[in-house]
Amino acid sequence: MPEANKQGPRTVTLRYFDGTRREAEIINQEVPYPDGKLIVSRTDTKGIITHVNRAFVEMSGYSKEELIGANHAILRHPDMPTVAFEDLWKTIESGKKWHGYVKNLRKDGCYYWVKATVIPNIRNGKLVGYTSVRRKPSRSKISESETLYATLM
Ligand SMILES: Cc1cc2nc3c(=O)[nH]c(=O)nc-3n(C[C@H](O)[C@H](O)[C@H](O)COP(=O)(O)O)c2cc1C
Figure 1 (cartoon, helix red, strand yellow):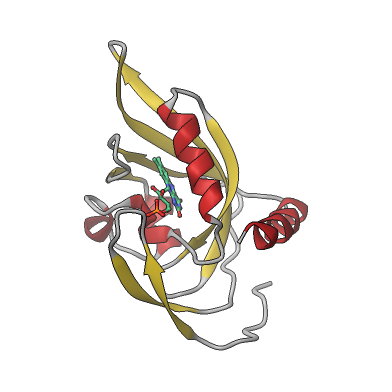
Figure 2 (cartoon, rainbow, N blue to C red):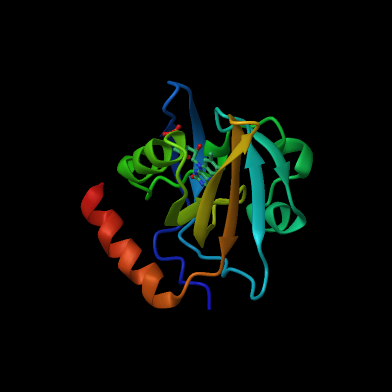
């Protein structure tokens, strides 16, 4: 069940790591992760999206054309603590896999939780980019992450 829309839409300025910013409408309503689907994307070494599957397009609310070439931070939700992404980048840049729970912002301002695994793609010993595969998170892990992330903000 989607959560009740307690706060109504609010406009938030999202500031990105690279210094850019954008205004986004945030709606406190969850779109539940669809059963049995994998949401997949690939990026280059900078986090620019190079590939998305159909489930990614459906859940994010963006078209494939809007996504390819965009920075993956296009999905960043203001409720996600910066340290989560610092940990992600530190891990994958050192060639390791990262696992984590992520609250993502849809184009329509609603959100969805994912259980993500991000894998470095190595070709002939050289890092060429990253792949992220998301699965449906359990309700208990979502609640745990909400509590933890609120303390990290
Ligand atoms: C393969 C891959 C997948 C990513 N998936 C997401 C995602 O689903 N949601 C998200 O907010 N950030 C994701 N990121 C992290 C973003 O690149 C970015 O670091 C993050 O959104 C925070 O934005 P900032 O670095 O501009 O502060 C992903 C990065 C990589 C390399």
